[in-house]
Image 1: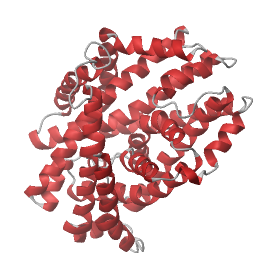
Image 2 (image 1 turned 90 degrees about the horizontal axis):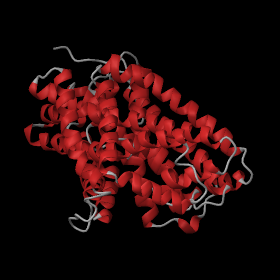
Image 3 (image 1 turned 45 degrees about the vertical axis):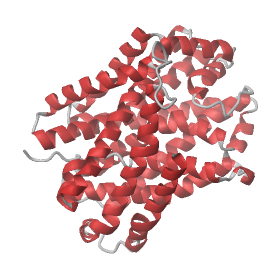
Image 4 (image 1 turned 90 degrees about the vertical axis):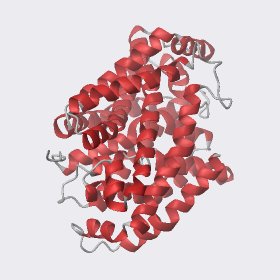
Length: 440
């Protein structure tokens, strides 16, 4: 069977950047920046993204296109049978992430309904916190919405690379940025909003410490979907006419722009209404509804915000399901439809315990963590760092001759090639190892 390919360079870039953007930019970036003092964290994040982040993206694109296979087959073909374990680890990682991520995706769907009815809008954050807790603790609610979210993702992926992922990404990604610009325009007109902008862009160097670097490196590298096989699968659909270096920079740039826009969308509004920018993950589902309840036309902007969040969630969830589907097609020669249905059922079964850990299974803990927390920790602190490190070492040392040939095929000069090798072979593994050790 002939390997599918992206229909165009822009289609690939939008799909890959959609994977990178996701809830990591819209949901996570504003509160992580808030917890790390704003401007200084922003500069550290930018520096890491355009060095380590781009190198890791490029490394995985190289592996994917060179082999023309998903992660397991790609590592086995290029580096030998012993390296197939790296691909399997990435597969386990992305399956784990998608399983608990679909719970948050379900919350996003749920909150679109809450915003439409006005139930989620109130100025009392204590009430909003209780409302949020009661919603996600309801087992029927949580499971129904996560199934709907996974089903929505599967409906897109079953269409294939061009007709499914690429065509939908060409709509969702521009829509994402348009919605963000609308919400930014509204946020910046609020009294006191510029205080939030200044806090966001003005560095406070006293906030720079080990913890900030760990957060910035984790957010920059791991929200770019490296270390779990996503970019290997996406790279395997790349045609030979696309320059890999330029594509990697574009993907990283769009992810950074989305994070910057998310900061400008959320933080000025938070400051305008005297909220806490370091409120944590609840910034999205508790603090922001309070902000919307305090502004004229708040319900409209609340609905727009949660629709935006759903778009961001889908652009990432598509990229999580595709490597699993691609593996089943490559390894077992299943049809895409069969692979999608099996993957959908497996993810739902794994996601249900994560959803119930906010309700009836909240007291069921292992290593003092709920099921949701354990899945998050396993993927983010263990599997992703190990996968990213292995990919970098593979490209920088084991298959360097093949890697450099793959890059220079369309970019014959590539004067940055020695820097890329140094970053892949030495810098990225060392920094990721540091994050891994600190995470433990």
